[in-house]
Image (cartoon, rainbow, N blue to C red; front, side):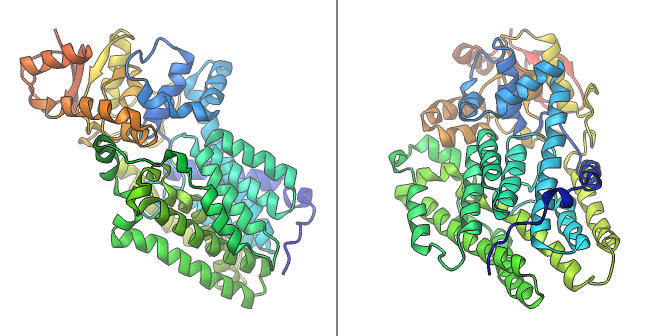
Length: 495
């Protein structure tokens, strides 16, 4: 069985196909929503804003700026914001283009796998419907409802894989380079998958895979991590597959078994390309599992946990869902139109919609550029941006993103002010840069129990770190003047 090139790409991508992908992109946004300043954007958006205005974040910027230096995502989005004269429109443009690229990449892969048009769309549709599906124990969604570098990188990986399967090597190289420029780590997983999928039939490199495993281990980083680093990382059990819950393991083992079954099913159904891709995807998954266990289980290699090696599941799930949809149409809805697949997916889309509405229940489902946030914590952060000097230093309860009604809005991303270390996103920086661990732990411990601080404790915080303001839940009763308060949060000044 050989990997033959596709037929004429021009014939496979008429304007109506691109239009359908664009419409599917818009529908996915309606289902899954769009947000600004939440979750990982507290890191990336803060870095973008600092690149545009170096006067911002004069204190503690190392907790979000260091890892941004290894990629071009931040300068690329910042350049777009300069051209458009709007950060919000730049974020939305990148989000829509990334989602379009992801679905177009899935469509290109579906064209390679399935010979019938309705099967191709049936392969793409589950991906769009399940954009916000949580992935096993990785702490990732398939596609986030906010812009971050994984989104354009994923589009690049999928388009690169489709080009590589079609033996268009220059195009594949350009797309994988683009992915690496956006998110180097995710691009490594994508490149590994390309190697597995495109290796010549009959000479699959089992010994070469072992050699690849050695190259993936940056042994120069291996040393015993300190206690502060362990505190930051070990609480995040998703980094350690050996500590996963049973249902997280189910999210790993069940798709691997199904992919094995898909390979056998596709052979019987005269779908040789699907069978080939399923076998290679299975081998890729088993190989990456071995790498992840080698990097995270032995105490001698624990620091390699920083590379979060189980996140190979992210790209794996795209191909798994595509195969699931295409094979369902081929075997179960054989003589039906693609509209039947849409009808099957509608209840699932409704479920995903209501889950997202529940996760962001105190804000808007789609945050349009120029609209003021409805979330009360985001409103408090916006008040900070509009009423405090750029040089102000803030403190906030370290686990603030888990507070009621907070909806994971990031203080730095929205308020554009310096913040003492927190315990939700900053540990990700500590994982990669262990030298930050001790300072991270000191700052986090200094803020613990802030809701019940006395005047002397607030004074000590000001003396140690120059903190001039604090943001607290509305239920706290600090001995401070609080010029802003709403139903969920209050902003108080240290005199």
